[in-house]
Figure 1 (tube, rainbow, N blue to C red):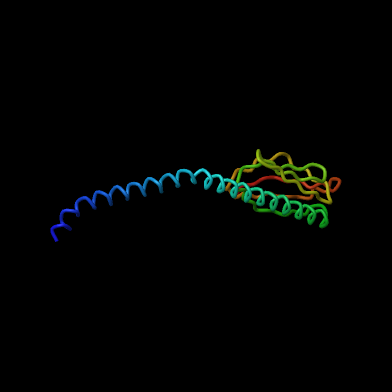
Figure 2 (cartoon, rainbow, N blue to C red):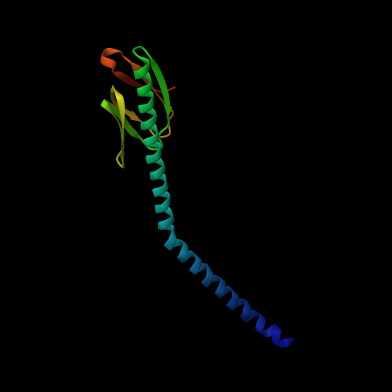
Length: 145
């Protein structure tokens, strides 16, 4: 019994040293892995933004084709929310959504005239597309509800 009492304080010191060593190793591993974790999150966010941009361009293209078929005077609205800010424009039969990181395009069957529209990120916006009737041209305007 006396032997256990004498050794007990020394064991507590050793245990504390081992715990500090384990804590230091865990922190080192965390610090080494942190940049990789942050980089993968950034990559996922960029990929999601690109896929969202492609969906918006495709949706706009489909609506343009629909109101072109329906004839002059027809109008449809499209609600969009972008994950990152971008510029939407269209001329001829091509719709373009561009950002610093990427550019998405879609072709339509009709002539489209959309002046460059700056769309902020994560803000609901509405694009009003109207068949102006002049040569079958579709005109787009941005509106915030």
